[in-house]
Image 1: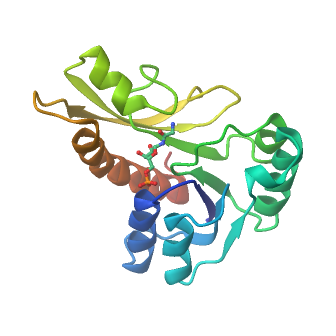
Image 2: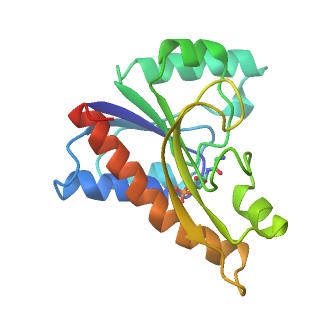
Length: 189
Ligand code: GAR
């Protein structure tokens, strides 16, 4: 199973996938890692692991639809079975979704449908929930909508900060992402 992973930031979940592949616990081919801006640590992590990288810089295009077309072309060139949004903080357009129908996975640091969007951890903390978690899903045209494939719960502790809670969520998120990829690769999802 070939995957392309899209990142916008530090790529710690990407690193977990890279490590699982190199240790032989996950049998997928990371065809490439792409980013929506230059200079991400996620792309650096991929380069250091010998994985091909590309950047389709959102700011280099006159509008969202031209950026979306360029992203679709760049990802399609690797002929992935699945595309994984792993901290990729851009909404893709319909032509991208049409190019990878039911093949665009997303991870989110909250128990969807609660707390979608760019600040899932902050919003859960602010609301005062006692349990939050993470979700792996098939992305659709909405913001963190789409069919849910897997979820894991994480308790919120009284002294939690956004950073501390996010780090504990990411531990579960990595496990869930790798397990979901394994199931997809095995045809068990
Ligand atoms: C992850 O927790 C991911 O769920 C979140 O960004 C983080 C990326 O961490 N994505 C979203 O909030 C999307 N709505 P990483 O760059 O260290 O892997």
